[in-house]
Image (cartoon, rainbow, N blue to C red; front, side, top):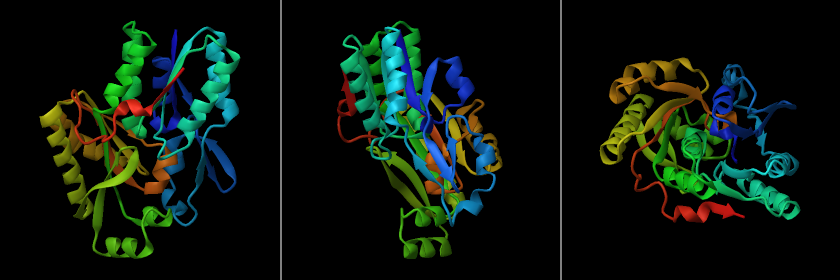
Length: 300
């Protein structure tokens, strides 16, 4: 059997992970000395007072080596292979930790086979390839076939979002004080994405309304060029604006109901309150990666 393993930054709800037999390894958020397991915490409750966190932004930590080894050891002892899909190695050390853990388990279990993949992203941009792996596994593909489905999917996905302000980005050291001050004063609203595994700015416009419109324009362009397989609306902070935007704008565009889910606070607290979309196209999105996706794989 093939065990599909990912991390909590993929933001897959626990019920959905259980339904599709996905093992989720949690990252952790530490706020005022209290540690929360990202995979099991109530994200909406945590985000309820996000504005109070801006002057003391919670920190995050990756899974321990022991936890990762335990997950892989359990699979090895059961005679299962592991396909792991993890948050971009440019954003977290989780992928590298998973590789070390898999190698350690392999040293103790010579027949253990695994493929560990750097998803090059986070949130549902990370989750969509996981679901492609599920589809491949359930269709009877072997480990190599399931891994190939993930690599193909990584090049078909995108994550676009816009923060309410630049304050959290500035407080977290992502931009300078002066840039944040000027940006907030003149209402500069960036559209952020992940490219080559790194967070980057896809566009800059004036006002958040225009940023949301820019996201829609970019989404339309990708759909026209590459088709649309699936989509969801993501949010950080208050869910209500995201639900309203999904109903008023995204659902009429794509012609069906769209799920609305929170982003893991491991990522969300670097950005602050925000709205965006994560989607998977039918064909490759040309500018998602510049290096061959095969470079993001470690296998036994």
